[in-house]
Image (cartoon, rainbow, N blue to C red; front, top):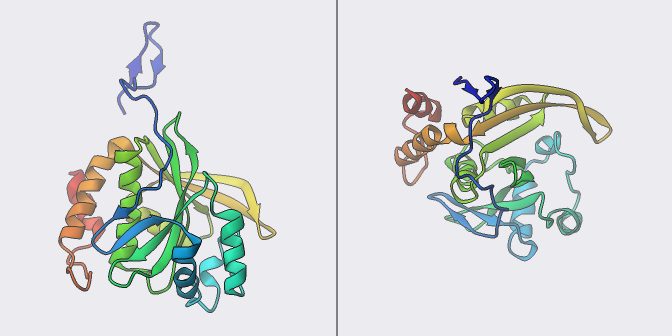
Length: 238
């Protein structure tokens, strides 16, 4: 790591140059090859999103969430109306391009424009969206928007340290592990040790290149990959 010294010979952080802060998320729709990322709307998304998330009859996808699962469509809509329309967290729906169905959701949260830090959170994919090109592309579109359009310097992924699937997802998407905050919070009557991952703006150029190459090499119809995203990330970093 490069060391910067002030006039007193003390190590200090790198100068931010002309960076003037980030901006708050807006209601722009982000469009990709397989999906669009749309600000959550009860009228537009609630029915298909509830149906898709209800494909998980075991409730497994809700274990590490602070809410859910929901026993009825009415309860789901009531939760949406009471929880999902603040400035932070800012909820999005992931809409499948071919069908127009909302198959998942996520948010920008812990939003700090003055420091240039923002988190992707509340990530929940229906079983039919998990392990698909759509799932990866949705995460890419949100990250790219945070860095390129909103000018954030740090993109965070936080998770319950016991959530093995979320650990693997963060690593696969290029986030770097930073450690664990013990007893950081609680939910559903349980303790949560929170693991932290991040991507910084200086790392995003290589990651963006890797994502774009990975998307370009997917089968345009089935979305099947020829090479893993991890292979493209390694190549871009060389």
